[in-house]
View 1 (tube, rainbow over the protein chains, first blue to last red):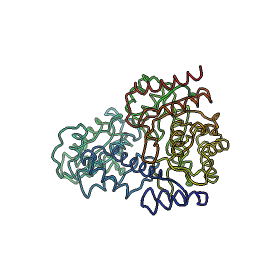
View 2: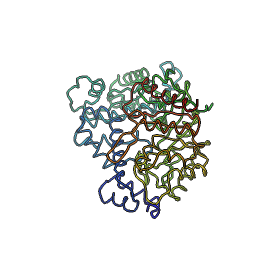
View 3: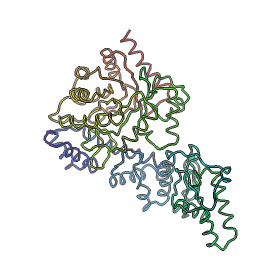
View 4: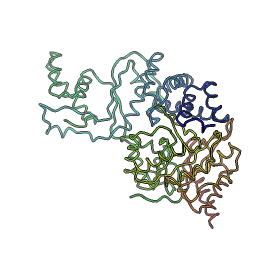
Length: 249
Length: 272
């Protein structure tokens, strides 16, 4: 009788069985609750929904792995990481890391997939344009990137493979190519590209609150290069053209 | 301004977004899954706002989890409230179900044991949600694949839920057919016990035959037996806003519009 079991205890048993569907756990539900064979429908619904969510969130990683390998990886992830967020769109934050041990390309593709999805629904922001530069106090100004910007560390040339997979084109040879991919949104469209070392440093310092003047001074000191500050200015100009800057704070 | 829901609608799904944004879909209203639009920004919100310019919107949630012994977070309710304030929907609904406990969320509509303690839990959660949103909600009768021993009939549970909370019912006619069939009951008799005067919206959908009974899959046209049950509902209630949900094997919008025409014709025939 389900009435003999407090609701919280009954529901905990049900969840334990969804997560680890062995026969003992099934009996723990069926015996006191008198439920029938339809119980298995909930187990199937639970797993199918999560596999489909992982596929939808990581479409290029799924395409790279192929159907069987993706489903095996998804099943392993579901067993190890039961969902906890109220939205299924947040499921699988650790999926790229799970893939890394067996397939670094798949892991990088999954990380890019995930960042593209997050950028797609990130907060809106009106990017600043070059016209706004005249009013900036360059002694103190710090660059604030658009809220959709994500930095994705990768170990391979997945950033070159991703567009080919997305367009169903011939996929380039996979190689080791450590770096960082920038993912953000221009208007409603997520975009991505690999960051060069100078702009990555500027970006990391900016995200930490550093002023653009202090970052330029650091670049000049590091490189003994008279062109360092010029390169920083070039980076900033590129970012303005790419709708990557939300404001100068 | 909030608009009343009436007529015949469809679940607004991604393959057909362009038609809704352009105002080209032959529907009287649209329904969307609330959680898909409880996001910070980007195209989803813009798409919904543009569709909203053409059609009244019903927000249909899947994660309120009113049947859980664990209270849903304020964060969820705050996000839902923000969406409601922005969209000004004609209807806000969710399901009589629970989705998880103890920090686990199954993302499935799990069956509530239809007991007095569970009824207390459900009513508290509905009161809290309606208070947070400052408006009454509709709650959908679920498809069920198991029946807990020693519990009350679903229609009795729903009647008491409506009486205690003032919420309305989102009557899913396919779910009645699926549940009644799975539990060896007469779906037409099921209607006798329901508080039909509390029904604010009707769902129609397709189901499939599983190994252990019927499954609410939303991946096929509405079954003839469900159309017959819908006709009986309308005969008893009069006209109610009615829509078709389709989430798998989604056909062209024209095909769904043709299927929706069957609902219009069934309602017209009964009410003529």
